[in-house]
Length: 536
Image 1: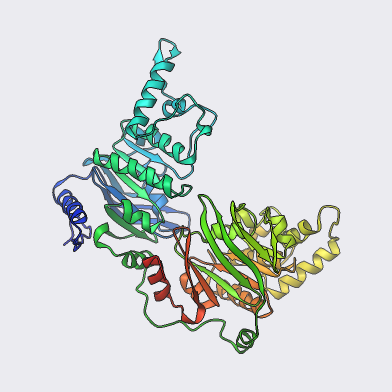
Image 2: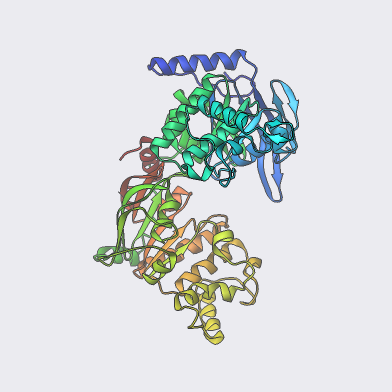
């Protein structure tokens, strides 16, 4: 039965430790007052309902994971809790009393501290200064440096971190900087610690160090809200899990009683049936293309980057769509960025047409015949102030260089050709691209790279945020390009799209490649089972 509108699932685990943890948490649920509770909280933005009557609670002495896909409402929930946004309706209770933090500073005074994915400390200051910035201990009008150093060492010692606190923060690794951020958070009479994607830039050893600190703080009674996309980490550290989807509460569960596959289906939002999907590419033309041998265009061996993606092998062939399947945070975008040279790999090799190359920059990737449509078209794709024409010829002009300017007449001819080919709906090609719909902006990006005559296209979430008709048009164009012999790497958070369009699917989880499936044997159910299991 539910308590206070929340779903409770009793553990069936035979493991003694998990059983004891579950019993302890169930006892707290039944008897204890939550240290923090949200009741019926809603928050809207123009055109978007970010949270809808969400209930959430956090008990003292627990790690509570908040899970959900992009747009689920996790970030908005945290910002309501920390005073960045006021709720439109509903209430926030701290130890049973209503609170109304108007700023993050108000939230800190209430004992709610947040450590974000991007560490918001000052690398040019010492460790001790970062911990006490804005509230330095003083001896008269002067800063009491000795007391500050002693207090900083004591705080870090409670986290089992023993470093020279007089050194600049920038002298230490990202993991140590995370510990410094946590030390700062708990130094402000913290009762609730919110960790927002704290492991995104850490390797396995550093994650282990962080988790040891988190367990220690939990055992001292601190309530910890842990936001992550990593399944293994969730089950390693979390006592309970709350799932959000599309701004609504799906449920609250004991981690020990929620199988990984069940968690994934709750995040995705539907039960996945056993039946295979009809492949969108199964036309006579594509069938003929599949019958002929395909030439390998790009081969990656042991390609990886510390703190970004674990070493993996990939092979892309002309006339083939290789899909990257995985949940948010699995490493899809990180892999795409490595292949295009946006991020530089620190291990492994890339061969193109049988020759080893150094993918040191996007310019190098373009010279090798690779194009890239990024996940975030607004900040990394379109140049909003430029016209449709200028956006389309941008990559081609870059490839030619500043001393080989593309004449305006040629620009117009190229833009006209792709506006017609891709059916870009624009009345005037010199109109700012920002005035186009999302789907048409995405087509402009696709046109930009097609104008460079690439042999391979990396399409990272090309259908995100656009309407169904535009999605079908872009996916159809992608498959048409594939039939003409182009190699395509395709990522999408919509797993159904990956399954329908891919000849092969490389499945990623927690920034590591698990296995590959042939498109013919892959359906959503199979892919999700592999993701949940963590192996083929």
